[in-house]
Length: 317
Ligand code: 13P
Ligand code: SF4
Image (tube, rainbow, N blue to C red; front, side, top):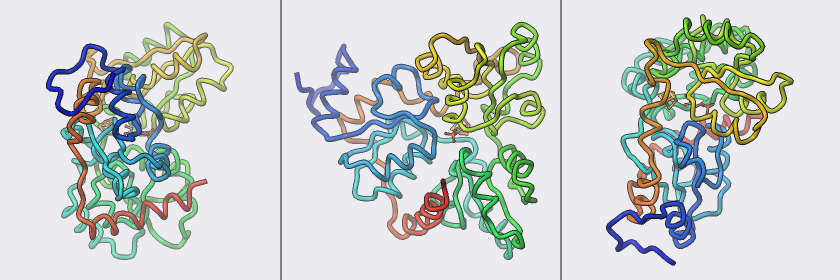
């Protein structure tokens, strides 16, 4: 059965309806690991920010449904301007991108005219356009190490990631004071309690976490790196210090092992990214049905933002 754009009500079997509409629209569905399990399950490709950017650049689909947050869909549009890029919920932002307004970043750059500006991909297109180089959590250390040793470096907008890159690369970075509301919420007390209950478990952490938590981790890396580590490690159980959406793929890929998420302070469920989780199966169906919300970009801004992203892709191993 083919579902058409004239339909008003969400069909009962959403995965089947999405699959049919996806073929009709010649669309591909890309999803980040922090999406709801049901959204991950209908995706054609699931990955971390770097892998999703590469997929967006390489796909021959006519439409990209980006199940992630706004800066990710925007990056897909920057890399694939001829394609229609849909974001199921346009409100799916990111606290890091919000923490770095372009005008303030331009002033920060102007105060440090001799610095190379490296920006984490979690920022707006306007901030990318003001940057020399973009990085993701999976390539930040490697890229910073490749920069000329005699040039000072600005790093924005995540100060936690920046401090970790600083420690790993041995380079001094001037940091923008942004942070992720999700990765700043993890309770050290709850982590220590989990370590007591599961002393054999390996602690896996995303570098957006604060340093006092990273100091308790056995392995630090991007979401994809954490997933690979869970597969490759000889440990049978893991305490995971990042958004718990990743546990779905960990359990699917390594079914014999145990995974424990770390709650937020006061046991709240604020360890789930409130932006990522705005995308739902119903909104995925709806955006394919209506062909909106669509990411649209000014061409001059796109070209400025493209240069530091292309530099990143060229320098990434
Ligand atoms: P990754 O680089 O692991 O995809 O992380 C992106 C992100 O937003 C983490 O909060
Ligand atoms: Fe942004 Fe944090 Fe959500 Fe990642 S988890 S998208 S950094 S708010």
